Length: 168
Image (tube, rainbow, N blue to C red; front, top):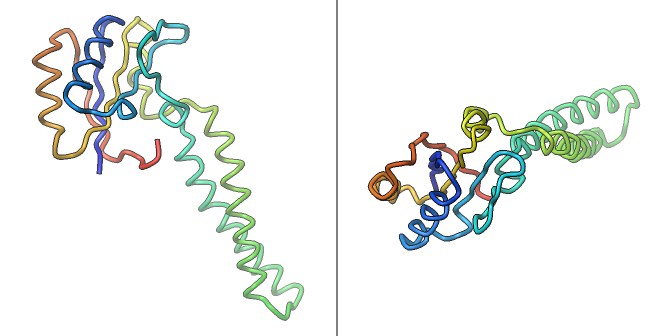
């Protein structure tokens, strides 16, 4: 399991030095993500992907649950009104269809919605700062925080994200 750590860095040079320190501390490059205001220079930094910057995953999960529930309800209504010979099959089929459609529709909406978890960093990024998101194994969180605090006094610690999704 990993824990996501957030740090705000004042400029691009600080962000590059921070990334180099993390790489030397054996944090894999795919676990280090940076975010800045629209159009900011990101040379040499791994920019956060759509999965990290949007509500795509949360929206897809919501769509899956709501779609499956509505599909199952529609299946129950259809089974009773049609007096189907296979009511359980109809309910399962419509629940599956609802889950697929709900996931698809909601993920399309979620991909265009900025992440609610990152709203608190918008003012800093608009002021020209860089957001660092590091996914660290739980056993190394204190070590990495101490490293960044000691080597980057210009950076400010912004907290943790307790539940890091497996895929992004």
